[in-house]
Amino acid sequence: MTDVKLAANEYIKADSNLLRGTIEEGLQNHITGALYDDDTQLSKFHGFYQQDDRDLRGERKAQKLEPLHSFMLRARVPGGVCTSQQWLDIDKIASSLTMNQSIRLTTRQTFQYHGILKRNLKPLIQALDLSSLDSIAACGDVNRNVMCNPNPVESSLHQETYEWSKQLSEQLLPRTNAYAEIWLDGEKVRGHEEEPMYGKTYLPRKFKIAVAVPPHNDVDVYTNCLGFIAISENGKLIGFNVTVGGGMGATHGDKSTYPRLADDLGFIKLADTIAVAREVITTQRDWGNRVDRKLARIKYTVQKHGIEKFRDEVAKRSGVTIEPPRTIKFTTRGDRFGWVKGTDNKWHLTLYIECGRIKDVPGKEVQTCFREIAKVHQGDFRMTSNQNMIVANVAEADKAAIEGIARKYGVLGERLTPLREHSIACVSLPTCALGMAEAERYFPEFTDKVDSLLTKHGISDQPIVMRMTGCPNGCARPYAAEIGLVGKGPGRYNLYLGAAFDGTRLSKMVRENINEAEIMDELDGRFERFALNRQTQENFGDFLVRTQEVKAVLSSARDFHD
Ligand code: SRM
Ligand code: SF4
Image (tube, rainbow, N blue to C red; front, side):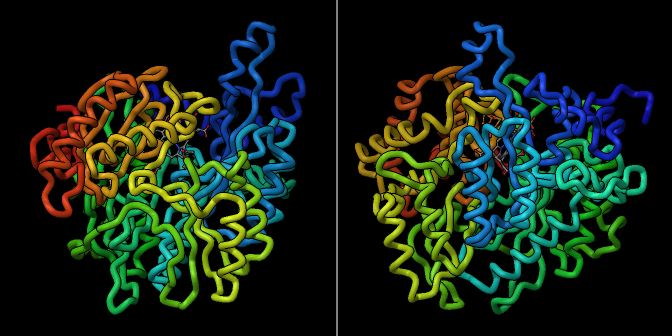
């Protein structure tokens, strides 16, 4: 360690004995539902966060009780693919070991449980393990769940890119045995293991990878730390365009923080994929900011050094020749709902899940629906980065039965508007400690109101990417949405507009700290002008930039705040 005072987490990691800390001791302490403070940072590397139900905070305090501590656990599911048996297990775990009993699909193609009591953490992780699932590195300062385009249309290309996302996920895992020791009663090997790529202080901050298959940019590849864009010839994958330095998180009022879209590193051949990924990571490990965690993401490292210098370093470390990027074009960002026949003649059914929440409510029994489908489904399930679910690889003969179940439980049948199909919201209240305004619980009703405005102007057939988050951290990637709402305080949001439909341009803040009526007012006038003056096939974000209602934000820090 240097003489410079580093961020507090750096010392916690360094002293943690490769991520063990005192987690085991904390689990044995039955006086509190919480872990020891430092361990709440280390627990993230094991896939879980300590939380409490914010709706109950006041009541508990009045009763002089400690907050009702519980844990949110996020699984690692590369590319979001799981089998029917795994889904049945995931569902059973939710019912038996969590207080919420629901399952939450995330914006990074995996699932979370909320409301796990401390005593249930170990049984839960063991149950996941029995189902060949884990939560290693789902959070923490390491590479997290690797996203991969789940689109079933180009089935063979999907299979190949999915295999790469799995490999990336596996190869970039931490090597410590801490997870196996603490949760799976694995052999104690303290002091006899190494962390060859990460080192004992791991990365300065979280790290995210996505694999995209043009023309689909559903994984929002440019918002990721590291992106792989599939390049194919005659339907065969030959390599990737690599992108580096994307990220969303920002802090209200702090101009040193900003969302950023990734730069092109260049084209690489397939065989070089893992080497380049590793050396992008080691460069960030060595060059990233370990003093100020707010500035520790790779987007700031790339902004500081420039993509040319970063590229040279990765090429030098990996020995790989990085060629100029190949030409690609993205045209879609949302999921393709309903049945689609893949090139392998298998059928795939994409179902809309409101804000990714899998639970039963009257008239819409989403949890029961997927349980019943999993009982008969021979193929797999694919979680999407838009928080939806694909029932994938269905044989012609099984189609009717699966569709029948989806209809019976109210998950299929409702007409979705194009706006809703392209909308996502983060979790926020009551579980997220950082939420400043509602998101998931308010977003459905908010979307109805925006839809009514679109109908009023006769443009309800227009797909618009709209996203809401409860705070500026950007978990639903709002700065890459044509309409972005970012929580500022209870019932108040910053309004961002003007991002590109295909995810290649960021949005810009047009009003700060406004309530619903003010948001609707801002949108009303713009929808009217869009309806009257849009060009053929012009998207809403592009229209606002072309007519100079909003300044274009191509990528960098400066455009965003100017
Ligand atoms: Fe996120 C923190 C939920 C995707 C940027 N995010 C959190 C925490 C863990 C709050 C906390 O630190 O205490 C939230 C837990 C809420 C809860 O109760 O479940 C949380 N993030 C989520 C999820 C579940 C949102 C969702 O509705 O699906 C997503 C889980 C993804 C996954 O499966 O891994 C989720 N988070 C994202 C994304 C989108 C993405 O990765 O594509 C981003 C923006 C991209 C990026 O990383 O730049 C994102 N989350 C953040 C940040 C800001 C990081 C930064 O650079 O400043 C935080 C706060 C932090 O890390 O300090 C955060
Ligand atoms: Fe929580 Fe903010 Fe992320 Fe929403 S964007 S889940 S409020 S951290």
